[in-house]
Image (cartoon, rainbow, N blue to C red):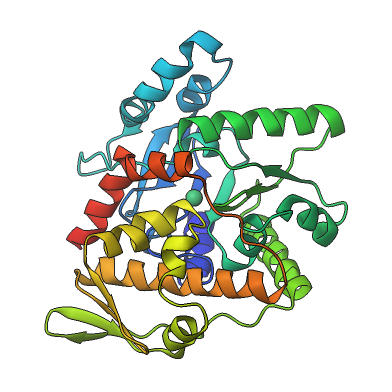
Length: 334
Ligand SMILES: [Zn+2]
């Protein structure tokens, strides 16, 4: 567990990798126990005794194995309550809700790191991203998962792709790209898991000739609202216009944090600032998500690539996803 906490602390504060409560990390630390980030917490908030839930990962893995065609709908519907039933109570007797992405962690190596990094997402949200990944990573063992609704469906598709890769090559792929979503790395060694995560992103950044991410994001409080006047805001508004946020839906977290808040009237833009009417933790998640979005849009366009947006079916699924509503509501309580 010490190595797990260290791994989470190392990346948790890096806003180019982790925005708000996005992403998740896990560690299999006992015969059947896996600690996984709890919903409503950020990766950086994980300590040895908080921010995660212990689940029976063997049961969760079994739930996603050998599912027959005629069982799919029922299993998908029950996957959230099933996952909850696999949670071990913490030492205070409480059961935290494990990350909505717990499923795919269950069949990977001991340590798993999943983030929504701006560098990897500059290719996962671009047309031809899979081919670019091959060019950039050469013969590294990785898999590319075309966009699919998160949760149960995504878990099944990742499992099938990993099994197929291993069968074909005899190698367990430790790097997984999720189209219009993010990156997963996994290893039995926490340091390797983290190193792979950084290595992949740095290679992409160098290949694209992308600039550095903003050094810090400042948020000042004024009349119960939070304001960010950092240069990236005016930069984005003058170059692309606020309408780019509606036009380019890149990934689920953009919808959950940014576009939903805009729809709810929580965000006001000026030419040089963004004002957010929300509790601090939610305001932070919104502004971090916005900064990442600005970076990804700019990086894709600067590299002369074409943005590949989520389609209507995909955005509709996220907007109606009960688990994401829970995450948002927990984020806004703190
Ligand atoms: Zn994710």
